[in-house]
Structures are given as C-alpha cells and as structure tokens.
Length: 526
Image (cartoon, rainbow, N blue to C red; front, side, top):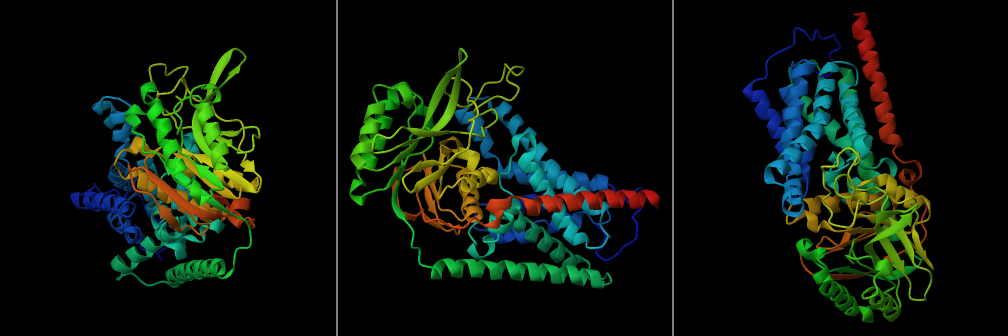
C-alpha cells in the first residue's frame, strides 16, 4: 500500500510482486485477530488494529495480489467466526459432515470477497488525497452491500465488536453500526501509517486526516457521554410494565417430536406460574415455544389461553401457523399475542426468512435441497410489518435472525412500537460462539431506535436490553431460566437513525463509487 500523502500515479504492471510466505502469514494474522475481537471473547480492543498486519502485507502490491491477500484474510476470519455452521448443518440438519464443510467453505469464500475487494481498492487508490478516510468509506460501503445482496447477511460487522462499550455505541442512533466500523477502519489505517511509514514525508494532508480522526473519536465519546448522562438524569415519567421472560431450554433434537409436546407444554406452564406473584404486565416465550399449530390444537391451545387469563397479562410466544389460499397451504413462522380480556388474537408473521433454513431459494429448481427446519412445509414471508398492540403496549416483534436487520426494527419503531421483542431459538447453534454473536447484534437495535429490547431465547441467551444498549439481565446457555424486570414503555422521540435509516452508509457508498470512477478516469487519462 502506498504511503498516505504521496500523490504519484502507480504503474500497476511494475508493482506485480508474487505473494511471499510473510505476506500470507500477515494476512492470516489479521483474519484471526478480527475473529478474536468478536464475542464470546473479551478482546474487542483488537478490532482497532486487527487489519494492520493486512495493510502491511499490501505494501507495494498491485490490486491483483492485494485482492488475493484480502481473500486470505477473509477466509481466515470467516472460517473461524462462522465454524458453528457445521454444527447447525451436521448435528441438527443431519447433513453429511463433508457436505457441511463444503457449504461452510462456499459461504466463507463469498464473504471473503468483501475484504478482498477492500484490499484491492485500498492499493489501487492509495496515494490519493485523504486515502485513509476513503479507505474507511470503502469498508463501510462494502458492509452495506453485504447487508443487502442475496437477501442480506449483516452478521458481525466490524462495529458490532464494541457492543459492550456504552460510551462508544451511542452514535448508533445517528449512523447505525456503520459509524463504528468507519472509526475502527480509520484507526487501523492511522496506526499502520504511524508504525510503518516513519520514513515517509509527513504531509499536511495526512496530518489533517489524523486530526479528523481524533475529532471524530472525541465527538463519539462526547456524544456517548451526553446521551448516557441525559438518560440517567431524566426521570422516566411514562408507563412501566413488569415483564417476564421464560426460557424453556427445550432440546432441539426432540423439540418437534409429537411425543415430547406434553413435556414442552408443562415446562412453559410451570415456569410461568412461578412468577405470577410478580404481577406481570407482559410474559414472553421464545420462537416456536409451542412446536405445534396453536391455531387449531384442541389439546394444548386451550391451556395456553387459560394461562393468559390466569396471569392477567398479555402473552407473546412463537408457534408455526398456516393459511389455505386458493387451494394451497402456506406456512408461517408466527408470533402470537394473547390478551387476558378475550380480545381477538393478534399475530406477526416472520418477514425475513432464513435461506435454506425456512425456505429454499429457487425451490422450484433446487428440488433436491432439503430445509433444515423440521416443520410442515416451506415457510412463506409475512405480508406486513406491524407492532402487536395491547392497551399502552406496542411490541415490535423480531423473530430469530430478523434482529440482525436494522431496517426491520426501524420499521416497527416508525409504526409506533415502544418495545422490541426478539423471539429466537438459538438451540440450533449448540454450545458455540453463535449465541454470543447473535446477542451482541441485538444490542444495536435498542440503541438505534432508543427502545428497550426483550429477548426470549429457547436455550439462551435471553436478556433485557435497555434503550442505551446495556444488557440489564441475561440468562445462561442451556438452562431453564426465568427473567423478570420492569420495562419502561414511555413514548420517546425517534432518533435520526430510526427516521432516516442508513444515510451515513449510503453516503459513503456513493462517495466511494464517485472516487473510484474519478480515479479510473484520471489514470486512463495519464
């Protein structure tokens, strides 16, 4: 990578240098360090310099070898970050272990394209004005593209590593997780320059970039301090609801066995009755807590309705559902809201399904591919995103990995949700790092919309998350658990991110494209 502050045009033909073992090791080191910065480890500080070895390996490289080094970093990172996919596919999906590994490798190859493109762009455009800032913009633009293309997979963006640092993550209500990713990449670039470009002329433009980075970091901390101080000092005068989360810890291998339904039902009834003296105003069970069709089950459904009456509290829970349309049966992953006053049952059908988990893309052609969810038929997409309301409560429900998509939480917030409710079944992940990663992303939905999040998971992690992103209470993995806490549902003003969405990321993507086309045009002219 060219030294920041040098503005000569690079002859890429002269820069084609074979990859050395040293360069490959540096690229691998960056990949492993990136993974180490994500949960469950407590090494989030590594993210701020994880890419420095990769940037060093890109010294004096042309775009082609830089692309390959970025691919190496991406593969090292995603293979160690997403290894749990083999557990999902092999143990619970009953796929051959070799097939499971092949699927993992293909997914990681796709994801590794993003750091590969980033590396190639960084070397191609290195030496231009404000190249470190543009480099951070490229990364954010690529993260945004990854969140949209092929139905989107915004799993573990770089900014998510900082989910435990409250002073830093408050800017998510302005620019989402992308603002943190931008700062982290900018810090990596500056650290690389300071460590390895000591002999280069310190241009005034580079000094300006460092000054800009310092001002942005300082503003981030100042804004975080302001938001946290504001929430501590302002006494909430709105409505508070005593909320209970029930974690049934139902083994995934027997969850869908009809012979196990009685035990599942008794588990949730028993755990719920232990907290009735808390006078709950809301009870939440996880995704598909009832592994049968609640809408017409004559044996168990009346017992659930009776419990809502007994507890005198609204009950939100997950169950599969179906509709018959034009002679066809369509299935849905559904969240129900039962009320204690015999109001009509309300529900929300999952709007963003898991590819190959809840439906098969191009299923008409991929007839040989089986789904991983053992329910009756492929799920269909819900036709509307609307909060489930009861009296002063307005719950924006996010089912399973819907919580990793900020646009879904924003849609609920804009339609009047005063809490977010994440129903999930992380039993699929087993005892891996995936439940930790899943929880870390849920934190950002609270900050982005300034809404509390109630997270009910079958086997953990269930949690209460405050509007400022603080995990107030959290269950353990693979244990029965009951969490209870008062949750404030007072009305609040929608923050900028909830109102305007990904304007920050879109702006950086747009600017990056302009920069790329400008550099292509300029080099063509030279």
